[in-house]
Structure formats: structure tokens, C-alpha cells
Length: 121
Image 1 (cartoon, rainbow, N blue to C red):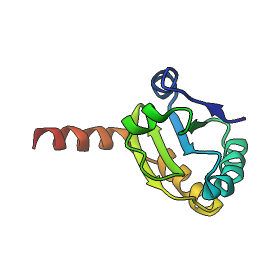
Image 2 (tube, helix red, strand yellow; image 1 turned 90 degrees about the vertical axis):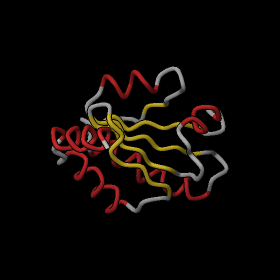
Image 3 (spheres, rainbow, N blue to C red; image 1 turned 120 degrees about the horizontal axis):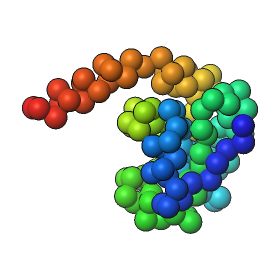
């Protein structure tokens, strides 16, 4: 499945409507972003059940600021609308595959329970 381009207008609905969404925050001038791009594209081809999306931080500066993207590339993973992974830096293919498998394997009832417990403190 090809990657999807997200904007401030589409990111919320995309996260809400899909079980797993991986988002690559990047910019055209960013060397590490260019190296990570093909790795991310390959993951999209291999994991067609997951939405692989990209946000151009130059075109979407307000969105990048709102999501506190201070370094690119940054990868965020959402599962059931919950942010479960957020890391700056270009990942090699094996590390991205490990993230994908970890996100797929999450016990979301446990994640929600941990969030609820944290909110009570």
C-alpha cells in the first residue's frame, strides 16, 4: 500500500478511522529523512494492513509545532487512536520492523488501563 500524505485537516480522522497508523514527519531538505524514506515505503509495501503516512513539516509547520516535532525524521505510531510510539531519528529497516511488530502485539486493554491509572495519580 502506498504511503498517504497527511495534513492538519486529515491527521485526526486518519488516526481515528484506522487501527494502526505510522506517521513519518520529514522535510525535503533533511538528509536522514531521505535515507529513511525508502525504508518507510518498503514497510508500507510489506504491511498493507497498516496506514503508513507522511507529514511534510515544512508544509505543515503548525501541525509539527502542535505535535512537538523538534527533530526530523520523527516516527509516531498510533494504535486505536492512542500514541504508542514516538521517536526521532532514522530507523534502519530491522528496527522499523521491530516497532511494527511491537505495535501490532500490544495489549490495548493493558495500555488503556495504564493510561487510566496514570490519570488518577
